[in-house]
Length: 248
Image (cartoon, rainbow, N blue to C red; front, side):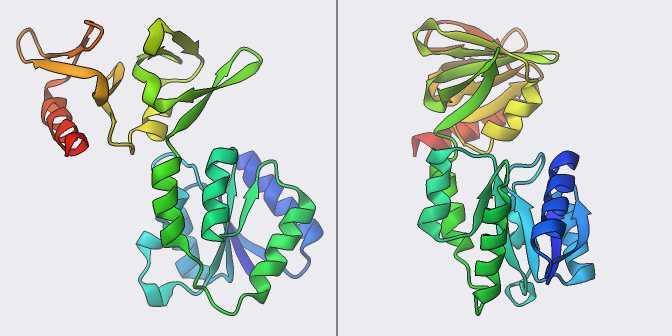
């Protein structure tokens, strides 16, 4: 079998390639790609039997891969690789789609590839997975806090303020977390959820907590707690559209 690895982390690509070489002698890795556009080109060039695909990558989710191909072009099978925790893993199980949880266990890798080899068609239920993930994936986010990882309910996040390499997450009940992640990191994770909009170079807001839009003095949003956040002029229509969508 010819395989392609798509993962934005170089170390993850290298580790997975070494595991395939060591434990899956009948599989040849013909390309390693760091993003989805590169992966699409490699698939068209090499016509692989298998794609080992990371779900969470900057710019594109791995779930978008099949959007780049017509139905008759999809002659490869997919095993997703993911660092998601149990609340999202249920989506994979529900959709009966093969996945490997990072860090990848060699025996689980070999078993997953064995299952893929035995499949008689490529009719894996990716559309069901996509819809399930849309519903489940943004219920919580994981953020670093010292030597711990906090799991925050996204519905409790009021806004996130970016300050260089750090971000301040303001939650309900006057809870605040300062984490060593820049705002772009949270934009990539949260802003495919219609409740969250990046309104300014320094702010992402949960539209459920917005009560008013002031267009004077450069523009700002008023929140339920009385705070006012600046909004860039080119984001005014976006916030209006998003609030309309959410309230339908």
